[in-house]
Image (cartoon, rainbow, N blue to C red; front, side):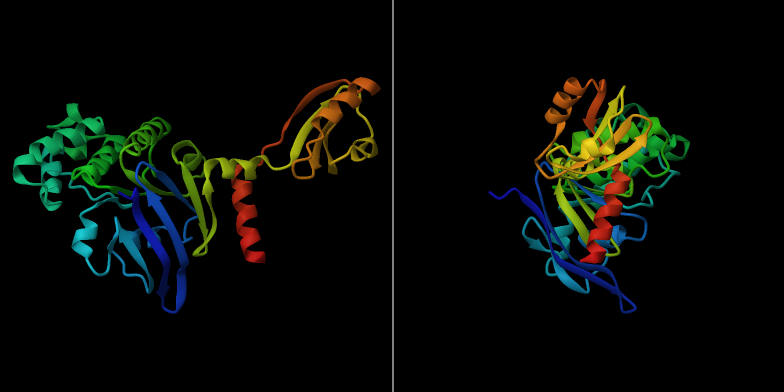
Length: 310
């Protein structure tokens, strides 16, 4: 049996002749959390709406567990749990009342509704909130209720659009932990504009900018973009820039501050060992040598600029 739960095939969406999403394709497997990353207005929410069947693509196909969304929308949607950016909750109801209604809307059999509600509450840390009115819950617990309604029918695919927006740091940490736990048994797509969130929660990541996918790969591949071919090196007795430039593999030397240098080098030709040997030989007093990581924000800028040039 295939572990493939979702396929997006050449998705394109036009609004008034403008391409909000352009030829986006990717796949999702069971037990995988995919981060869908991009700035506001990049096309994330439009893509999410197409994946959930709430917006028809102008071109392209969405398949959920092999079921075509356009040809068999009811069957495909039944396999999806969805948390849009605006929470679909009724604040005048208690947690139990709301989740019971959500279970009915998701066609959970009557005899299984009570059990489904209990399981969803347990997964989302809501068991002690059963009789509380949703409007009296904190922002973080309201978000937990919104996630609970998305998993109430035990969907194979869970799609979360900006699930941590508006939460405080403690609530964000709790929701991220919840997403990681859910992702062990479900397939999850997490849409966000927060770069560190993807690195903390996801197995794979894709970055969208102006409707185009500009990166699709594993978290390790994203981290490789962060690390790059750079070293941050500090000396007690600073050598000349020309002496550092003469080291094999070095392509560029930047003086960051007094006695601190950023050394760029050719791919797979790290000069770290040579720097250490020369420092000992010439008494440079090496006191720091470490990979110089590019910020995730800078990686995003680099990737989008590369796409624009291409």
